Image 1 (cartoon, rainbow, N blue to C red):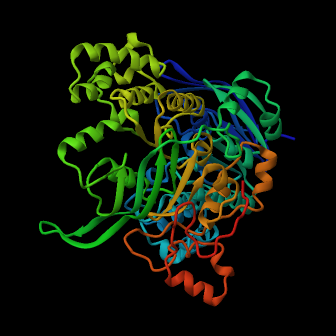
Image 2: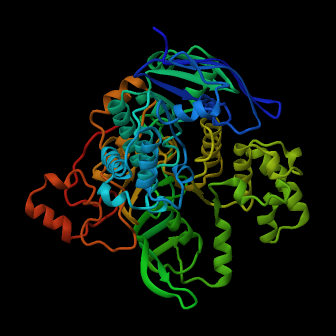
Length: 599
């Protein structure tokens, strides 16, 4: 049988530098092909080359055939006819892919009319049908919204609706879930399966997330440095990898079902937070701006952290994780609640005590390129906190090489600038800078989220080693629960600015009690095709997006999305609607907590 899509000997060069080298792929009707690899491996370039969407300077050689028709070198008019009608694209960033000045419904209707002889009204009705099919609530109303008025998950659903508009034969999905929270990712993957089922299309899914590929793809092609180094069925590639690179890639992936070795008992309390709150004003107007409301960014966070321990703070985007960190790092009296650092209550310290405390708490930022001064050599970057604390020149000259060596960097590279290092090396520079003043508490704000899995594994190993050698305490913020499972001792789950569950990571992950924690854990994909596909039948899909933090909600703020709420009796639902669940130490802030194993 002739493949629906056949790529043979594809080469792509930019300015004489090869990006894709000799890639050959086949795709049959109704099949899902997973294209996986790290950043720069050539995945996205391969997908864009199929539709002729590479920039003008790209040199493309080889063959791309759709149902026997050659696409490489085809006239632009012919490619325009094929795009959308026979091959559709779901882009990585829908906010960039949608035109910001046109309504969502009009843009989907335009895609419908591009290949069908329909009136504007008929195309508009079809756009509403498609939005309804991909799970957009109130589709007729939402069709009149602009792209910026949609959340990230809703924009990605609308992009999938546009791809479905003309029942294509092939859908190319380029990292469609990369920037999404794990709960929204689960929704989007479910919508992609719906799109494939409704259109009967074959799907090429490009992703760096091996768990996503394991749960979706029939066949997998692994790319490295522009080449396909291994391909086969999903089960064969994941369970019986043949190539060293594939084995290395799979070994580096953190797993939510991993078991950590026993850890030494923690020491004295380092951080105690009770009822922390932080609001930001909402203002409107021009020259005379007036306050019209508040954003309740943090609204009741409780934390407990001891020396030698790692506490992970997890939750969806906008849940208040980063705001909590920066409130702690201010070392000032909180707006509401109480914070104790090393037994000292914030807000009661003088300037000298505050400066002494600041040395004991340091931060490693999410994006090292943004947090490292591009005009300073890394040696000066690492030395800057030491100089701020009054260290003399001899102490600085002795300490900087020690710090670079400790984090696995060559001390002779101290005179290099940040752009001369890789992403993982830049993050190591950030860690060295944080360690320079010998802190006792490191605050880590998504420290590995921007790194490929192999680089991420090295940084996580470094952090674990430093904690053991130096007796550090870590407050670790992450949206990646697989990473949390592999590094944290305790976990605190935050929803809409409030702590909803906390406890030892083994206990919370194995026996979660709060429905939100259960949904988060259920949505994390496993890099194991057999187990991941079995989990899809019991996966908890939350409805919609988190509510707006500009309102203060009575009762349980999770009830609008809670899968348990609908099954409760009338009196129980009234309690959820009117009484705020109380969080007391370890456990779940839920009126009706029930253990449910989801991993």
